[in-house]
Length: 248
Image (tube, rainbow, N blue to C red; front, side):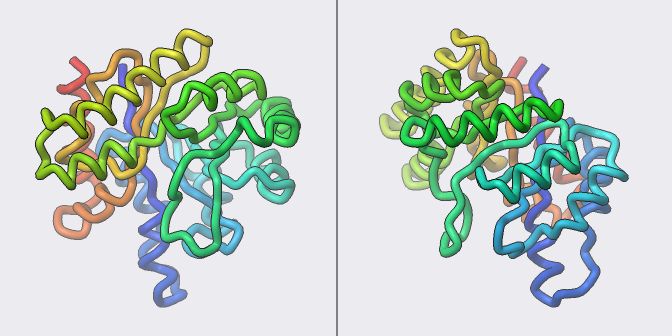
């Protein structure tokens, strides 16, 4: 059964615009759970631009579904994860000047360093995921460093989908989707879990949800954007329905 992980970072973005106490990401997480989410994702950035340390602590304590902590591969973040102990920690690249994560983690160029972080997280009982571009060499490197999960970056597919007028049959869209599919196949062949995410929305999610073996889709901005108009619970319910029907 394919699962939906809902990223609530941008609920915190709205809150931090006023540096106040609302809207509460924990409340959003509960609403997402009631809408059918199988997990909650937050990215604790080094600059704390949206999610704060206290949010992560409260989410760990108060939510009753899987918590996926996105994080840079740094000593500080690994220590926080080992203390909080989310069910899953996903290592991602992070730049102070980026608006959002702009690409996959280059595991192949830093295997020795990442292997130590992965071992420490796994030793704390945390499932370790890595966010990668749809490239075979990154899959092979992920296996070597000990990752249990690879989340494939679907941004290039999503951007092609939008640029080509939402035509799922255009050559550019088909080519990007094929990269994700082939990468997922290699991930599974190496015994790791195949997840996918980034820039997925209500228009482009179904072809990705149909891919063989994909276990989880992590979606945030599109759901939070829709929730502004119809509420978080209903926004999650609609997305969950789309991916479940597509997977069938």
